[in-house]
Amino acid sequence: MQNFDVIIIGGGFLGLSTAYQLSKMGVKTLLLEAGDIGGGTSASCSGRAQTCEGHLDPLNIQIIRDGLARHETLEEELGARYDWRKIGLFLLIRSEELWQRWQERSAILTPAGIPTEVVDRVALQKAEPNMNTSHLLGAAYSVEGMLDPLKFSLAYANAAQRQGAVILGRSKVTGFEVKNHQITAVKTKNTVYRAEKVAVMAGAWTSKVTRMAGVSVPVHFTHAEALVTERIPPMIYNNVELADFYETIHGKAKAVAIGVHPQLNGTLDISEAVTTTDQLHKGVSAWGVTSISKELVRLYPSLEKVRIVRTWGRPTSFTPDEEPLIGWVPGIDNLFVGTSLVITITTVPLLSEWMALMIQGKQSPVSMDEYSPTRFAVPAL
Image (cartoon, rainbow, N blue to C red; front, top):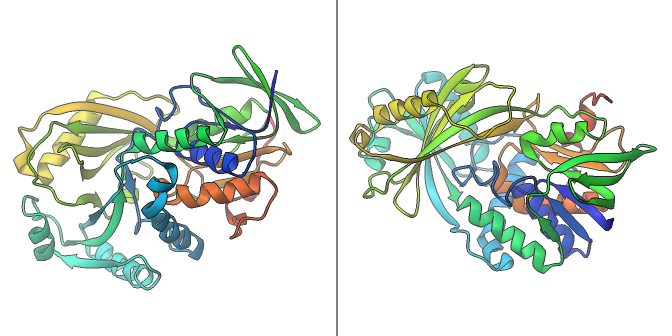
Protein backbone atom coordinates (compact mmCIF):
# COMPACT_ATOMS: atom_id res chain seq x y z
CA MET A 1 0.00 0.00 0.00
CA GLN A 2 1.42 3.38 -1.04
CA ASN A 3 -0.10 6.76 -0.17
CA PHE A 4 -0.24 9.96 -2.21
CA ASP A 5 -2.11 13.25 -2.18
CA VAL A 6 -3.23 12.91 -5.80
CA ILE A 7 -3.20 10.03 -8.28
CA ILE A 8 -3.39 10.96 -11.97
CA ILE A 9 -4.47 8.28 -14.46
CA GLY A 10 -3.16 8.94 -17.96
CA GLY A 11 0.35 9.65 -19.18
CA GLY A 12 -0.34 11.99 -22.09
CA PHE A 13 0.02 15.75 -22.45
CA LEU A 14 -2.65 16.63 -19.91
CA GLY A 15 -1.76 14.09 -17.23
CA LEU A 16 1.99 14.73 -17.40
CA SER A 17 1.68 18.51 -17.39
CA THR A 18 -0.73 18.43 -14.45
CA ALA A 19 1.59 16.07 -12.56
CA TYR A 20 4.36 18.60 -13.10
CA GLN A 21 2.25 21.50 -11.89
CA LEU A 22 0.99 19.63 -8.81
CA SER A 23 4.44 18.43 -7.79
CA LYS A 24 5.85 21.91 -8.31
CA MET A 25 3.22 23.14 -5.85
CA GLY A 26 4.36 20.59 -3.27
CA VAL A 27 1.61 18.03 -3.80
CA LYS A 28 2.67 14.37 -3.46
CA THR A 29 1.66 13.07 -6.88
CA LEU A 30 1.57 9.67 -8.57
CA LEU A 31 0.87 9.24 -12.30
CA LEU A 32 -0.20 5.86 -13.68
CA GLU A 33 -0.08 5.13 -17.42
CA ALA A 34 -1.29 1.85 -18.92
CA GLY A 35 1.30 1.88 -21.72
CA ASP A 36 4.53 3.74 -22.26
CA ILE A 37 4.82 7.29 -20.93
CA GLY A 38 3.95 9.63 -23.77
CA GLY A 39 3.30 6.66 -26.04
CA GLY A 40 -0.45 6.96 -26.50
CA THR A 41 -2.65 9.36 -28.42
CA SER A 42 -0.65 12.43 -27.36
CA ALA A 43 2.55 11.22 -29.01
CA SER A 44 0.65 10.06 -32.12
CA CYS A 45 -0.20 13.50 -33.43
CA SER A 46 1.33 16.01 -35.82
CA GLY A 47 2.53 18.31 -33.02
CA ARG A 48 0.45 21.32 -34.03
CA ALA A 49 -0.19 24.06 -31.50
CA GLN A 50 -3.34 25.33 -33.18
CA THR A 51 -4.51 28.93 -32.95
CA CYS A 52 -7.35 30.09 -35.19
CA GLU A 53 -9.46 26.92 -35.32
CA GLY A 54 -10.90 26.99 -31.81
CA HIS A 55 -14.32 28.12 -30.64
CA LEU A 56 -14.90 31.85 -30.58
CA ASP A 57 -16.18 32.33 -27.04
CA PRO A 58 -14.01 34.54 -24.79
CA LEU A 59 -12.66 31.70 -22.63
CA ASN A 60 -11.48 29.61 -25.58
CA ILE A 61 -9.82 32.62 -27.19
CA GLN A 62 -8.07 33.50 -23.92
CA ILE A 63 -6.65 30.04 -23.27
CA ILE A 64 -5.44 29.73 -26.88
CA ARG A 65 -3.77 33.14 -26.91
CA ASP A 66 -2.25 32.89 -23.43
CA GLY A 67 -1.37 29.21 -23.75
CA LEU A 68 0.55 29.87 -26.96
CA ALA A 69 2.53 32.60 -25.21
CA ARG A 70 3.56 30.16 -22.45
CA HIS A 71 5.39 28.00 -25.00
CA GLU A 72 7.88 30.80 -25.66
CA THR A 73 9.55 30.18 -22.29
CA LEU A 74 8.35 26.66 -21.46
CA GLU A 75 11.35 24.77 -22.86
CA GLU A 76 13.59 26.75 -20.52
CA GLU A 77 11.26 26.12 -17.58
CA LEU A 78 11.12 22.37 -18.19
CA GLY A 79 14.83 22.15 -18.90
CA ALA A 80 14.37 20.31 -22.20
CA ARG A 81 14.03 21.06 -25.89
CA TYR A 82 10.90 19.85 -27.65
CA ASP A 83 11.58 21.55 -31.00
CA TRP A 84 9.22 24.47 -30.46
CA ARG A 85 8.86 26.72 -33.49
CA LYS A 86 6.34 28.93 -35.30
CA ILE A 87 4.98 28.12 -38.74
CA GLY A 88 2.39 29.52 -41.10
CA LEU A 89 -0.98 27.79 -41.48
CA PHE A 90 -3.21 27.80 -44.56
CA LEU A 91 -6.77 26.54 -44.08
CA LEU A 92 -8.00 25.71 -47.57
CA ILE A 93 -11.31 27.29 -48.62
CA ARG A 94 -13.40 25.41 -51.16
CA SER A 95 -16.71 27.31 -51.13
CA GLU A 96 -18.17 30.82 -50.97
CA GLU A 97 -19.86 29.92 -47.68
CA LEU A 98 -16.50 29.06 -46.12
CA TRP A 99 -14.96 32.24 -47.53
CA GLN A 100 -17.61 34.33 -45.81
CA ARG A 101 -17.38 32.34 -42.57
CA TRP A 102 -13.63 32.85 -42.30
CA GLN A 103 -13.97 36.53 -43.11
CA GLU A 104 -16.28 36.76 -40.10
CA ARG A 105 -13.98 34.65 -37.90
CA SER A 106 -10.94 36.72 -38.80
CA ALA A 107 -12.81 39.88 -37.80
CA ILE A 108 -13.20 38.37 -34.31
CA LEU A 109 -9.86 36.59 -33.92
CA THR A 110 -7.50 39.33 -35.10
CA PRO A 111 -8.61 42.04 -32.63
CA ALA A 112 -8.58 39.36 -29.88
CA GLY A 113 -4.86 38.72 -30.41
CA ILE A 114 -4.95 35.78 -32.87
CA PRO A 115 -4.10 37.43 -36.22
CA THR A 116 -6.00 35.73 -39.05
CA GLU A 117 -6.65 36.81 -42.63
CA VAL A 118 -8.35 35.41 -45.71
CA VAL A 119 -6.20 35.33 -48.85
CA ASP A 120 -7.16 34.58 -52.45
CA ARG A 121 -5.91 31.77 -54.65
CA VAL A 122 -3.16 33.91 -56.18
CA ALA A 123 -1.63 34.61 -52.77
CA LEU A 124 -2.00 30.96 -51.75
CA GLN A 125 -0.26 29.78 -54.92
CA LYS A 126 2.59 32.20 -54.33
CA ALA A 127 3.10 30.90 -50.79
CA GLU A 128 2.75 27.23 -51.82
CA PRO A 129 3.94 27.05 -55.45
CA ASN A 130 3.78 23.23 -55.60
CA MET A 131 0.13 23.08 -54.53
CA ASN A 132 -2.68 22.34 -56.97
CA THR A 133 -5.04 25.23 -56.21
CA SER A 134 -7.43 24.74 -59.15
CA HIS A 135 -10.29 23.59 -56.91
CA LEU A 136 -9.75 26.26 -54.24
CA LEU A 137 -10.96 29.83 -53.74
CA GLY A 138 -8.15 30.68 -51.35
CA ALA A 139 -7.34 30.08 -47.70
CA ALA A 140 -7.48 31.48 -44.22
CA TYR A 141 -3.97 32.26 -43.00
CA SER A 142 -2.60 32.40 -39.47
CA VAL A 143 0.57 31.51 -37.58
CA GLU A 144 0.62 28.55 -35.21
CA GLY A 145 3.19 26.51 -33.29
CA MET A 146 4.81 23.15 -33.94
CA LEU A 147 6.70 20.77 -31.67
CA ASP A 148 7.82 17.18 -31.33
CA PRO A 149 4.98 15.54 -29.37
CA LEU A 150 7.06 12.75 -27.84
CA LYS A 151 9.78 15.17 -26.73
CA PHE A 152 7.04 17.42 -25.31
CA SER A 153 5.58 14.55 -23.28
CA LEU A 154 8.97 13.46 -21.96
CA ALA A 155 9.96 17.03 -21.11
CA TYR A 156 6.96 17.26 -18.78
CA ALA A 157 7.54 13.74 -17.39
CA ASN A 158 11.18 14.40 -16.53
CA ALA A 159 10.41 17.82 -15.06
CA ALA A 160 7.64 16.32 -12.90
CA GLN A 161 10.00 13.65 -11.60
CA ARG A 162 12.60 16.26 -10.69
CA GLN A 163 9.89 17.97 -8.64
CA GLY A 164 9.21 14.70 -6.79
CA ALA A 165 6.32 13.18 -8.76
CA VAL A 166 6.26 9.41 -9.24
CA ILE A 167 5.66 8.61 -12.93
CA LEU A 168 4.90 4.96 -13.71
CA GLY A 169 4.40 3.53 -17.19
CA ARG A 170 3.10 0.01 -17.84
CA SER A 171 0.84 0.43 -14.80
CA LYS A 172 -2.69 -0.15 -16.01
CA VAL A 173 -5.42 0.66 -13.53
CA THR A 174 -7.57 -2.42 -12.99
CA GLY A 175 -10.12 -1.08 -10.52
CA PHE A 176 -11.03 1.19 -7.62
CA GLU A 177 -12.19 0.78 -4.06
CA VAL A 178 -15.15 3.11 -3.49
CA LYS A 179 -16.80 3.86 -0.14
CA ASN A 180 -19.28 6.58 0.78
CA HIS A 181 -18.95 8.30 -2.62
CA GLN A 182 -15.15 8.43 -2.33
CA ILE A 183 -12.43 6.54 -4.15
CA THR A 184 -10.36 5.09 -1.31
CA ALA A 185 -7.86 3.10 -3.39
CA VAL A 186 -6.62 2.69 -6.96
CA LYS A 187 -5.64 -0.81 -8.01
CA THR A 188 -3.11 -2.01 -10.56
CA LYS A 189 -2.14 -5.62 -11.24
CA ASN A 190 0.50 -5.75 -8.52
CA THR A 191 -0.05 -2.70 -6.28
CA VAL A 192 -2.78 -0.83 -4.44
CA TYR A 193 -2.38 2.94 -4.06
CA ARG A 194 -4.27 5.35 -1.83
CA ALA A 195 -4.79 9.06 -2.37
CA GLU A 196 -7.05 11.84 -1.19
CA LYS A 197 -7.99 12.68 -4.78
CA VAL A 198 -7.96 10.93 -8.16
CA ALA A 199 -7.74 12.69 -11.53
CA VAL A 200 -8.55 10.81 -14.74
CA MET A 201 -6.85 12.34 -17.77
CA ALA A 202 -6.90 9.37 -20.10
CA GLY A 203 -8.28 10.94 -23.28
CA ALA A 204 -10.52 8.58 -25.21
CA TRP A 205 -10.12 6.00 -22.43
CA THR A 206 -11.52 8.37 -19.76
CA SER A 207 -15.05 6.99 -19.72
CA LYS A 208 -13.75 3.41 -19.61
CA VAL A 209 -11.69 4.29 -16.52
CA THR A 210 -14.43 6.17 -14.67
CA ARG A 211 -16.85 3.27 -15.18
CA MET A 212 -14.65 1.24 -12.85
CA ALA A 213 -15.56 3.76 -10.15
CA GLY A 214 -19.27 3.42 -10.90
CA VAL A 215 -19.84 6.57 -12.98
CA SER A 216 -19.90 7.22 -16.71
CA VAL A 217 -18.80 10.50 -18.26
CA PRO A 218 -19.86 11.49 -21.81
CA VAL A 219 -16.52 11.09 -23.61
CA HIS A 220 -16.85 9.76 -27.15
CA PHE A 221 -14.22 9.16 -29.80
CA THR A 222 -13.45 8.57 -33.43
CA HIS A 223 -10.41 6.80 -34.86
CA ALA A 224 -7.88 8.84 -36.84
CA GLU A 225 -5.11 7.53 -39.09
CA ALA A 226 -2.11 9.36 -40.55
CA LEU A 227 1.14 8.66 -42.35
CA VAL A 228 4.71 9.92 -42.52
CA THR A 229 6.72 10.19 -45.74
CA GLU A 230 10.37 9.70 -46.42
CA ARG A 231 12.62 12.76 -46.23
CA ILE A 232 12.24 15.04 -49.23
CA PRO A 233 13.75 18.39 -50.31
CA PRO A 234 11.82 21.44 -49.06
CA MET A 235 8.73 21.93 -51.21
CA ILE A 236 5.94 22.59 -48.67
CA TYR A 237 6.50 25.66 -46.55
CA ASN A 238 3.49 25.91 -44.25
CA ASN A 239 1.07 23.69 -42.42
CA VAL A 240 -1.93 23.00 -44.65
CA GLU A 241 -5.39 21.94 -43.46
CA LEU A 242 -8.99 22.10 -44.65
CA ALA A 243 -10.95 25.12 -43.48
CA ASP A 244 -13.97 22.80 -43.12
CA PHE A 245 -12.14 19.98 -41.32
CA TYR A 246 -14.91 19.28 -38.81
CA GLU A 247 -17.71 19.41 -41.37
CA THR A 248 -15.75 17.01 -43.57
CA ILE A 249 -15.58 14.30 -40.92
CA HIS A 250 -18.66 15.00 -38.77
CA GLY A 251 -21.24 12.24 -38.80
CA LYS A 252 -19.41 10.22 -41.46
CA ALA A 253 -18.63 6.53 -41.12
CA LYS A 254 -15.43 7.17 -43.09
CA ALA A 255 -13.93 10.46 -44.24
CA VAL A 256 -10.60 12.04 -45.14
CA ALA A 257 -9.72 15.57 -44.08
CA ILE A 258 -6.29 16.16 -45.60
CA GLY A 259 -3.60 17.93 -43.60
CA VAL A 260 0.07 18.38 -44.54
CA HIS A 261 2.73 19.25 -41.97
CA PRO A 262 6.44 19.61 -42.84
CA GLN A 263 8.75 18.33 -40.11
CA LEU A 264 12.22 19.51 -39.11
CA ASN A 265 13.84 16.29 -40.33
CA GLY A 266 12.49 16.71 -43.88
CA THR A 267 9.59 14.27 -43.63
CA LEU A 268 5.93 15.16 -44.04
CA ASP A 269 3.27 14.24 -41.50
CA ILE A 270 0.04 13.69 -43.46
CA SER A 271 -3.36 13.43 -41.76
CA GLU A 272 -6.00 12.17 -41.48
CA ALA A 273 -8.49 9.41 -42.30
CA VAL A 274 -11.28 9.27 -39.73
CA THR A 275 -13.62 6.37 -39.00
CA THR A 276 -16.50 6.02 -36.58
CA THR A 277 -15.98 3.03 -34.28
CA ASP A 278 -16.76 1.78 -30.79
CA GLN A 279 -13.35 0.10 -30.50
CA LEU A 280 -10.39 1.77 -28.78
CA HIS A 281 -7.26 0.85 -30.72
CA LYS A 282 -4.13 2.21 -32.42
CA GLY A 283 -4.34 0.26 -35.66
CA VAL A 284 -4.28 1.43 -39.27
CA SER A 285 -6.15 0.23 -42.34
CA ALA A 286 -5.45 -0.16 -46.03
CA TRP A 287 -8.41 2.15 -46.65
CA GLY A 288 -6.93 4.89 -44.49
CA VAL A 289 -3.46 4.89 -46.06
CA THR A 290 -4.71 4.75 -49.64
CA SER A 291 -7.41 7.39 -49.10
CA ILE A 292 -4.98 9.83 -47.50
CA SER A 293 -2.44 9.21 -50.27
CA LYS A 294 -5.04 9.89 -52.96
CA GLU A 295 -6.01 13.24 -51.41
CA LEU A 296 -2.36 14.17 -50.89
CA VAL A 297 -1.45 13.60 -54.54
CA ARG A 298 -4.50 15.55 -55.65
CA LEU A 299 -3.30 18.51 -53.62
CA TYR A 300 0.43 18.08 -54.35
CA PRO A 301 0.81 16.11 -57.64
CA SER A 302 4.62 16.20 -57.45
CA LEU A 303 4.49 13.94 -54.37
CA GLU A 304 3.14 10.99 -56.36
CA LYS A 305 6.42 9.03 -56.17
CA VAL A 306 7.25 9.87 -52.55
CA ARG A 307 7.40 6.81 -50.30
CA ILE A 308 5.47 6.26 -47.07
CA VAL A 309 7.74 5.10 -44.26
CA ARG A 310 5.38 4.96 -41.29
CA THR A 311 1.69 5.04 -40.41
CA TRP A 312 -0.16 5.42 -37.14
CA GLY A 313 -3.66 5.40 -35.73
CA ARG A 314 -5.19 6.82 -32.56
CA PRO A 315 -8.58 7.40 -30.95
CA THR A 316 -9.55 11.07 -30.68
CA SER A 317 -11.94 12.02 -27.89
CA PHE A 318 -14.74 14.58 -27.87
CA THR A 319 -17.79 15.46 -25.79
CA PRO A 320 -21.39 15.87 -27.01
CA ASP A 321 -21.06 19.68 -27.15
CA GLU A 322 -17.42 19.52 -28.37
CA GLU A 323 -16.20 21.51 -25.38
CA PRO A 324 -13.59 20.26 -22.88
CA LEU A 325 -14.57 18.18 -19.86
CA ILE A 326 -12.79 19.61 -16.80
CA GLY A 327 -13.89 19.34 -13.18
CA TRP A 328 -15.29 17.13 -10.45
CA VAL A 329 -17.50 14.19 -11.41
CA PRO A 330 -20.95 14.10 -9.78
CA GLY A 331 -21.45 10.98 -7.68
CA ILE A 332 -17.81 10.52 -6.63
CA ASP A 333 -16.70 13.36 -4.41
CA ASN A 334 -12.94 13.09 -5.00
CA LEU A 335 -12.88 12.18 -8.72
CA PHE A 336 -11.65 14.85 -11.14
CA VAL A 337 -11.56 14.56 -14.95
CA GLY A 338 -9.70 16.51 -17.59
CA THR A 339 -10.09 15.51 -21.22
CA SER A 340 -11.24 16.36 -24.74
CA LEU A 341 -9.67 19.78 -25.09
CA VAL A 342 -10.69 21.37 -28.37
CA ILE A 343 -7.11 22.56 -28.93
CA THR A 344 -4.71 20.61 -26.75
CA ILE A 345 -1.03 21.39 -27.31
CA THR A 346 -1.60 25.15 -27.33
CA THR A 347 -3.57 25.22 -24.11
CA VAL A 348 -1.84 22.54 -21.99
CA PRO A 349 0.75 24.84 -20.36
CA LEU A 350 -2.02 27.10 -19.07
CA LEU A 351 -4.83 24.64 -18.32
CA SER A 352 -2.59 22.20 -16.45
CA GLU A 353 -1.72 24.94 -13.95
CA TRP A 354 -5.37 25.87 -13.52
CA MET A 355 -6.39 22.23 -13.08
CA ALA A 356 -3.65 21.69 -10.50
CA LEU A 357 -5.17 24.52 -8.48
CA MET A 358 -8.69 23.12 -8.85
CA ILE A 359 -7.59 19.65 -7.74
CA GLN A 360 -6.21 21.21 -4.56
CA GLY A 361 -9.54 22.90 -3.91
CA LYS A 362 -8.24 26.32 -4.90
CA GLN A 363 -9.74 28.80 -7.32
CA SER A 364 -8.32 28.94 -10.84
CA PRO A 365 -7.52 32.45 -12.17
CA VAL A 366 -10.44 32.13 -14.58
CA SER A 367 -13.58 30.13 -13.87
CA MET A 368 -13.91 26.93 -15.91
CA ASP A 369 -17.41 26.13 -14.71
CA GLU A 370 -18.64 25.97 -18.30
CA TYR A 371 -16.43 22.90 -18.82
CA SER A 372 -17.69 21.11 -15.70
CA PRO A 373 -19.08 17.56 -16.01
CA THR A 374 -22.15 18.85 -14.15
CA ARG A 375 -23.43 20.30 -17.45
CA PHE A 376 -24.25 16.71 -18.42
CA ALA A 377 -26.33 14.14 -16.60
CA VAL A 378 -23.59 11.80 -15.41
CA PRO A 379 -25.29 8.46 -14.68
CA ALA A 380 -24.27 6.16 -11.87
CA LEU A 381 -23.69 2.59 -13.01
